[in-house]
Length: 226
Image (cartoon, rainbow, N blue to C red; front, side):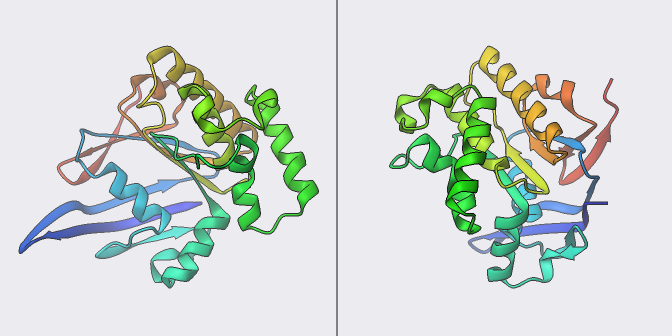
């Protein structure tokens, strides 16, 4: 099992009040599996992704990725582990506006110390796959929303992470563009045999998943696909 999140509970304090977000939640994913997490706004979906990635830590429970219990790592070591093993895709793209498409794309490789030639080769390969070979010197504000999300997907997978976490990746796109992005995302992650955990309201995403989990009343409930 590549990912095993076991008996996770997460609470936050808001002033003097305690707010429960996740209660004894468990989740597993194998290599190459596409897991969809659904639930209404405020149900804790983004919190779950933050716990899986080690951005945040649970009050109780553990998260194991590739036999590493990341909840026991220091904050610095969690950051290093996340940089090497996890890719992120966000609803609002989160591209750096002062960097070109190519510079945004190779940022994870810069952080991991790749050589200049290997970075350029991988960037060209992915730019071709996402249909943006002619836009490598453009800045994000010159791209459409769909084009920006294509770059964000490529950036998330360029270093071949074990797990890709996607937080409402089509939530800021129209239906047609959203479908195109899901198809591209599914193709690229399957080619690299990556495990995907996606949270979304999009029913279209269900076409690509192996497992659907509903987050409801602080718990995850497995749902039959059809």
